[in-house]
Length: 359
Picture 1 (cartoon, rainbow, N blue to C red):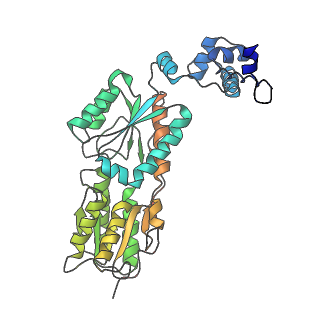
Picture 2 (cartoon, one colour):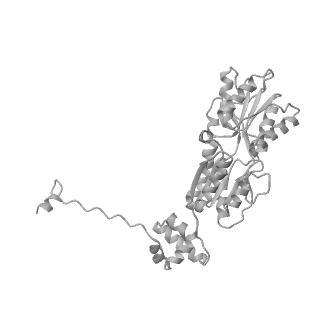
Picture 3 (cartoon, rainbow, N blue to C red):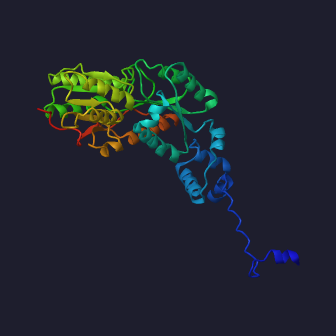
């Protein structure tokens, strides 16, 4: 009876047997509960034709009740899809890691993909041959069903390439040449104009712009909008320094502008990342913000409200932009023909970093 003694605890009581782990529900369980065939369940779950609306609703309700989640691999094989979508960002990894715009944008994308069973494939690639090979690699063997094209460039070669590869796509912003893909866009120019008008209303007459790369359409459009706005105010439109959107380049541009004999009394930055770096550069140079120098950013990232002085910034909703782009791409993959989407116009959030021009 030694085996029975071994099975008892210190109080002489045999421990209760571990409860068997609940089996994961299968497609057969869903079919049995819904009173249909497994094939019909598969058609309903993959939104394929041949299933009435009432039957599809009943099957989906049963699947939810049972906690059934189809295998992504099985779904991929049954409908010839990868259920993965690509985001290739043509900037250096350190810029991507540091710029909070991308964090919020990707969070917005994931909020849609996670509920639809999609996987986001993220890659950083230098524009040019390496970037083209990245897209070709993603298209090979159907590793992704579609891509989000960011940072559009003049005559962007990625658009015909992605079309040739047979991938669905959505572009952030409108291309400067015909594109077969829907665009999700925000009026960058309106945001910059609002910032300039705010500074002009405060009496500033020497206003500079720390711009993004002119090869990127949104960087170019923001710079053009700045120049148009200051010209309309009768001011010098030549105080523009181009950067790569990084904080270090923003700080260098600020030092360059502040070293001028006719240094500006206000600087409009093309993103918050550079504006915050510029704010620090100015203060290290002994220039008070905003008393001697007013500063505005772009994107209204979370940090803008927490630096000192807090940053006046053009507000765009990066997370919403990501979510809308994801929904538009999913609609394209589903065979729909989604229209371009114009997001709400940017607005200026006025904080402590801007005030009346120094006298």
